[in-house]
Image 1 (spheres, rainbow, N blue to C red):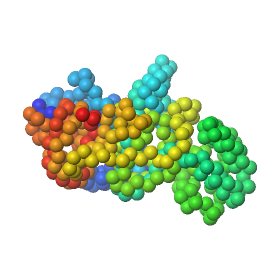
Image 2 (image 1 turned 180 degrees about the horizontal axis):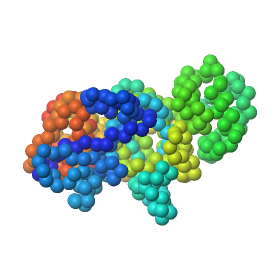
Image 3 (image 1 turned 45 degrees about the vertical axis):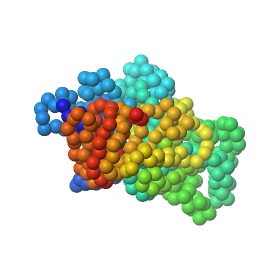
Image 4 (image 1 turned 180 degrees about the vertical axis):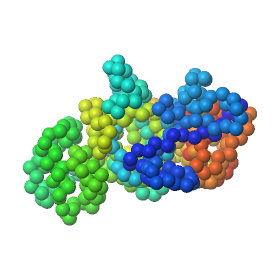
Length: 391
């Protein structure tokens, strides 16, 4: 058996996806339908299928079956993401929160594919987002409170909406202000509805351009959604190609547009607060959110060898226990894979070889699965992304 096999993933056609975006990124003929995410991994909702010309080699049709047959697991899920419109305002649970929420919904008999289900598996979902193109636009983490207060004071000069002072007053508590403000904005209070309508009518002149643009963008996609007000309390960040964000459990975020590679815990648990037609679970979102304000949580790469750099959550205090990493390989390299791994080529062509096994050549848009930990010899040039654990 090869030890390295070609795989392909499921393309998700969520409404916020780029028309033909995943296909175009893989060098394929793009269609007109939205293509939002390509899943590469063993998650039971969409396990990657194995592509082979040799019947019975390997003996598993997809990576879910590989887990069943071997007893091994992939501790991550890899995705290619192509967003043309804003995603939901969301956060992901930590290990204990995910386990408890999953068990609670299982005991209640909620089907795992039910639209109103919040916890679809018992796993945490910290994630890294690496921009593949310049201009990846995102909201990520809470802005410093003084910035939010200054923005509300500016808004108060442009509109006499009476809910603005109520919003500002909730931010006065240095310990619980952000939590109180978010809870109120997502509470369903009719005053918030009037506030969001007022934001949409506010003349952009006088507002910082990024804030005015954000209101226009979100109002265009989700008119009247209270998540628009929450979004104004978040950092807005634009990533160049090669820049990354680290999103630990509890980080509030919403991608706005762009093409990127994600690696995350092997989970589909998303707790949404707005900017979506999907299930919103404000109570669970408030339980998991980290309300600590600060700058966007960027993740700097570490050069580990010529033509190889890694994006490693364990370099961050909040990611110390995360075992996986995302490697970007641009040329010939000898790479240490600490676990079974997933590779995706988005530029050029690469051949991967593991000790004692035949090589596998991947062209642009193709993906491969490395069945075991060990050294990988990589030949070629372009851009190869490898999800694996730290050796």
